[in-house]
Length: 269
Image (cartoon, rainbow, N blue to C red; front, side):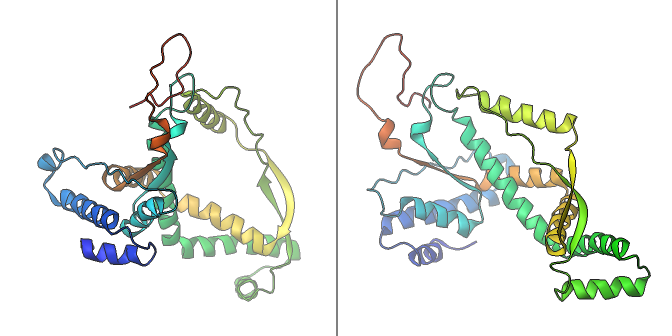
């Protein structure tokens, strides 16, 4: 883990000035690491603090947070405070920002796992494409198989067309209402429908180059343990996640209003 002065030096490469902000976030990041070194019964009693950065547009507030997340390899999401007002009437539920952070963490961990299995997935993808080529050309044998593999790697088959079954694009779901809380319902409905019905396929002729990309993604998904990915993503969100809330000043109002009308001010904690 980098020391605060090293974190500041890294931030200096991308952001001009803002020394106080850099120092504050560097110390906060170091304290977060120190908290993780404390034994578990005591670490649960230590809560991280939020940081408010005040300044005009363009001084580097967002960039400091974004670069800090890259340095720490931490899940990061930026949200706008103006999107969260009164749940059920106007705006989104504040819990959705944590869900967005979790989605970001899952994507981050999945990319890392994809790199780990990239070589094996590449070979499995080549095997599937070679099967299609050999079937089309009516040839067989291990020697012929390795010859085709070598030619594929040299790019000689890049524009060669093969036929394979590819899933059709699903019909997009239409959002009927935009009130807070309905996003969870929509996501749950999409997941349920995808589990109930297998995706229809359509025969298509595509190039060998594209076919290998398609099969490599499929094989990588098979090799990755998504349950482990989700658990690791959850751990990173709980210990390292960074949520940057922008435009807080726009929801701070002094008008005292009352009546039956829906509040459009920032009323969520």
